Length: 628
Image 1 (tube, rainbow, N blue to C red):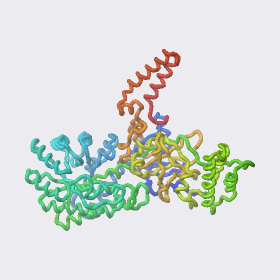
Image 2 (image 1 turned 60 degrees about the horizontal axis):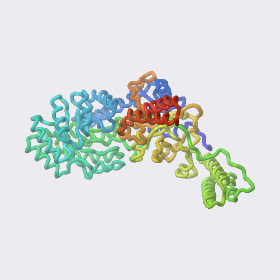
Image 3 (image 1 turned 90 degrees about the vertical axis):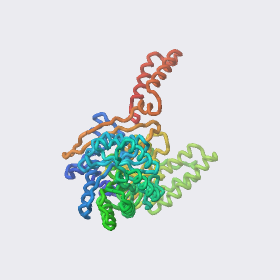
Image 4 (image 1 turned 30 degrees about the vertical axis):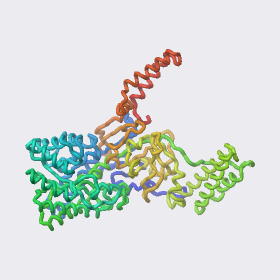
């Protein structure tokens, strides 16, 4: 390395994206700060893992931090309340959490608990999610907002729940739903609480732009909206229409897109009010983003605004629009899911082994070397910072020429092996000169030299968005962060699929194709953490190679720098994931036993081997799906 570092961990950009939640302690380890008590000592994440390991809880682990979830709910509600007071808004704020963003019971239960002081509710986009919502004792004024396609059974349950005091809003998404609601409400003789989803023409920028605009999947266009109003009036149910839903988008990167979309939503709201619709709630859907990279710019994985700015812009825009139209200020509703839960979970796994694309030494010259091997070896004499690109070009040219000779049978296997080792040594020398700052070769070239760190997790199970839509999450070693990293790596999981790879990483100077890492220590684990994975990742995962859910642990950070273990969910066993794909584990055990007995009958194995084989099979079928 040709660089020295006063603070090596700065290269990971932790100070940019960590939000004072993720920090580096004096021991050079990732530590968790308690946002509910910022003066409390940070808790070392490796220490937490050691404690969990002592309890028999192994990595890979999804670690949920209850304190972070509580903080985000409080922060959002307080920011809206402060904005309401600051601009003189006369309405209230009533947020709801979209269950689809994280459907895990421990998450939803705590959101309800932490949101109760703010009358914070839930959003259900399906019958199962409505069933979950109705099993929670929400605050008296909290909402349950029902979105998505709804059949008669869904609508019936939503209407009947009003008898128990739930503020269950059926958001009308299509003309067909209007007819069904009218029929079921008439049959039950119960007034529903209704909303309507209005398609906005404004389209946001970013990765999820297609979820907004007039080509979005859900909602009524202007013509359908007018028809709905007339049908509800004719059915004597127009007085039930209390909420207008206008989805802004998802992970909106630019705050000006928020302003424009909110302003358009207000136009529909004031026009509907003019039509005699007794609206009281304006639901602006999702959109509040997470700054995964810490760039603070309008990019796919970042946002150019803070929570405070988002809330102020929403409240201010609605106030001005309503005042101009002479309409009473509504109760504001948002369905922020990602911003509430993303920071509260992290995936922790260990590196199992590394494949290096370099060699510490090169073989010496031999008299019978092909002249291209001699030319390749000669590059070692002129490697320097100024000539790195030249050395790169020469090394790849000679290596490719030698490979062509090998393919034609002009050089033998041992000569080719010597050439490859010389090449790998040259790559090691080039990497030493390139360092991690002021790199003299391109990021793509450096990626070709990167090691492969084989890691104990399944990308498809635990980080599906990374695989499917190139979502970025901060990934950082959890230890040795006061020691300059001496290698670059891409990460692979333990599935047998070449797509199970992570090769885009957030660093302080931008997104790079390889991650600075340390040489793996001997006889001790090397942990990596993937942060801000609380939104969608736990729900969207699949069973690629039948790797199941990881162990999940929920903790709370204490004021004394310790933590309390609130809940443990053991990861899937092999027998459990087998049942998911229609195998009966007991049938499998019985069939294996038959084959063992047949092998004894034919004398392929001895009788004493039976117990060893059956114990091994049973132990495996009841074991963790990940590397133990």
